[in-house]
Image (cartoon, rainbow, N blue to C red; front, side, top):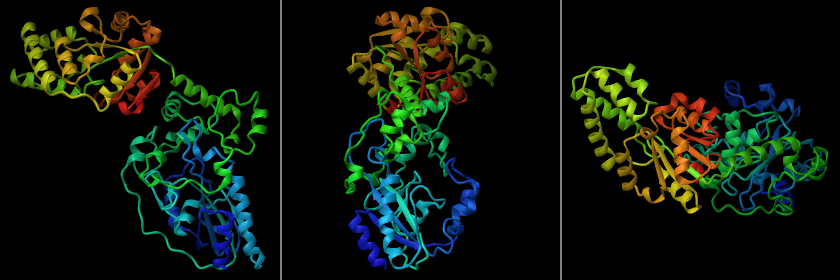
Length: 497
């Protein structure tokens, strides 16, 4: 019987097939009780006990269906470019089950329609292993596979799980747009694929995850970066490689009814046209063009915020001054012209002495030690190549900043500088950004400001500019506010390349 199933599966073009026992999968119970994904069945017993799906089931016939096409990346996940897999897999499973029914056994087919955890069944059947992104990875086809299974009352010789594991490179964790894979659990609410299928209005944070993914339906990023997917073969299933929809667009249909009619056999149609249009609008907002880029320096281009704390500690220690954290905490959003006199007064020192010593320390650090954040220089180079005019708007020491930027090879991309000392107010005001825009000859509405502090985001907004909030360890307490108020939030420069 097993051989008959293997031969029939091959004729049907089923990519791979394996067999496992139908039993109560008690090993899943604790995991499901501790953390359930939003799309999981509420009743855990149904998720782990085949009896609820098919009484007297003895075996599970598990099948993989490759869908890899190697088509260019667009805003549509590759799994949804071909014919709806529910239809294709369902038809092939039904044809395969005729082997069992022809021998007098009962068979019931499932493809994303049953309560059981199909990835666990596939693992038990020796068809793959689990990646850090919680996807099943086939040694033959990578993670680009659909899973379908047949429950039957026939007793079939079972296969053994593979003694293989994920490479553990962590690429999927690092590149996930929403950080859904951080830690041991999968957080669906931060998964771009889940969010593109979620109905209703999305908050700014969730919309930003979709923007970062670049997908209007689904998300392939964790699969694209996975080394186990390199060099996997093109699918042999015609329905998944022919008549492909390559991209989702706003003019695909005139109404939701027309959309459902035209794309009835596509996996992206089940939520309706409104969700697709919402996602496309979110992506369009993220594509706002700008002809001027205004960069803060410390904590944005340069990984220098810790340096300032170290200089302050060193200065205080050299002058025998104790803890003045209540004062220094308030200096963070001040301009340099404001902060040094406040520090001098708090320490009871001459203002010119403080300025002179800090200036020298800063010049030494910036001239020789401070480094740029990863890929910051590459991003500025990319903007420059595309004709974007670049300005610097900083509260730092002018000479020290220029020394660091010169050493790091950034000066060649910069058109103009604007310093807080020139405008006399801190960055919660629009003045420094307006000055920078004026000096590069770009209208404020056509400028994008890159800042690592909330005050800077707010000041740039007052100037009528687009804003990108940049993560820095010194501003983690402001993260949620910056995500909410900025046009976008990035954790590293590589996200924009």
